[in-house]
Amino acid sequence: MRIELATAADIPALTTLLNLLFSQEAEFQPDAEAQHRGLLKIISNPEVGEILTIRTDDSIVGMINLLYTVSTALGERVALLEDMVVLPQFRGAGTGSKLLQAAIEHARAIGCKRITLLTDGDNVAAQNFYRNNGFSASTMLPFRLKL
Image 1 (tube, rainbow, N blue to C red):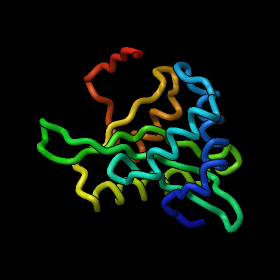
Image 2: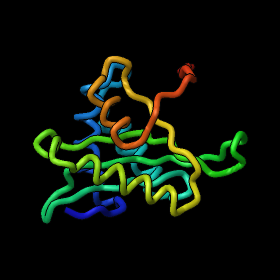
Image 3: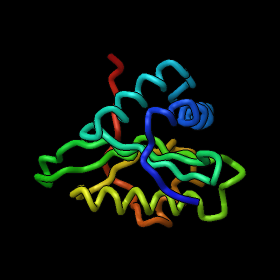
Image 4: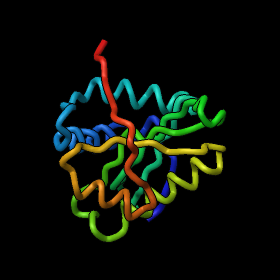
């Protein structure tokens, strides 16, 4: 398996992965057109973010999306891990950890000083996965306003 940055040609496969992810999450619903637009905006502008993929010889089996901003608390660039998903048949074999570690190293290499992510409150498996990969729960509580 290899890790590569996503390109526009990967959008159909990435949309399929996001469909899987959003089918599992409480707050989101799959919307292929919206996902296509969002993916294209990220892939077209690396200052906004980057998508790393993990691939077998013939297909993408996982993705992770890093979006970039600046933290005034740190005075440095930081990343938001927006989406991470691995096909079910590749879970439990280290594929997700390999992808996540590559994303952490990538963020570090481009100067990010923190990665923040959200998981569903009841997704204990995801929370344990992130803890096992060095993340810790924040005392901050996320709020959203849909516009």
